[in-house]
Image (tube, rainbow, N blue to C red; front, side, top):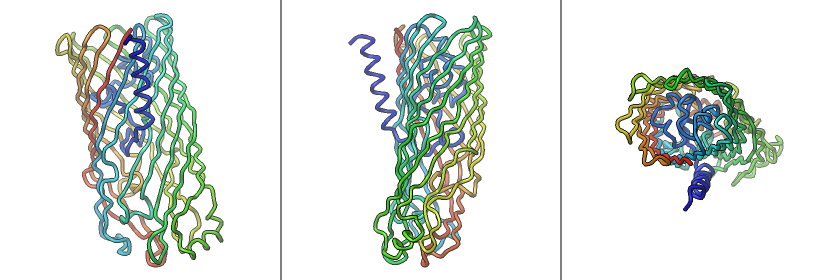
Length: 433
């Protein structure tokens, strides 16, 4: 197989990974991940916008493409496991039962593919496809929070056509068009008051567009600074309410309120953000990397769906979120001619107030601890592995319901997600031609 055929096969494989991966409720600041199977996993995002050592710079900083010679392809693949278990606390309505919901996350695959093409040493084109935005949760049937969250999926897959140019021997500029395909699929139980529960499902798909702008400033061969701005992307979800197993009285009340056949506007905004990163070679075999970032989750717009069936007034309730910030530091060590070792520590602040964690989004402030390595197999091929551990501690929820469950209310759900953590295992493969 030729190099070109190999690269085409890899891009097709990664496209399949991105399209079929279900990013769980693990976050950068909110539910926008840094992890797409590349070497950044082992660095905990340290140097994210300045590293520019492979074609994944299409995503992290398109200006970094000017540092890559020839044509390059990067394939990233990862699997993660989320440990997210809910413990029922005092004050939870007795009528909701005693099921804690199991682990709503579990195992998920993910990844991305990136390609850069040299039109000249100073002008580069690129393309990427990855799914780095979203959450997916699925609780066990009959759990105490079923009237607020049962199954939820909010995913975005990005197509990233990109261009970069070198302005002079130090400054490069780049831009990517972020064409995002969003997928929404939410389901909650509905209290029928008498008998088994009904359900409400909202589904829709939507396209949105934004831009990623990058700057790379290279002081010299061993020192550089990168800055990336990602614009907001609006996903205008408009979902038709789909009901199952409604009791006749509840159906009649919904119809009288105009909610039975309503279309719900659940548009969300993938937040804008800034990331500034540095790469500093401090010795022939050592380099230090760092990143500082900000994301505007206060404009996210995600809503909780559900109703009190005795007095339904709306099918969704807006949730409050806060902007987040990121800080990470890391190192690269040239262990041998073949091996480059990576390590990093990062922290992202929470986009929810602890004590008000939404049952549909059991995620918040995140630590990242990453390690990894890259092996230079030949002048045209290298591969790498990464492992990252992301603990989030204990997340507390306090969803209050004013109407008793026996009268059709959703009840109060109070409790904790104890010792929430995620583990990423990633592999990346890089070809040059």
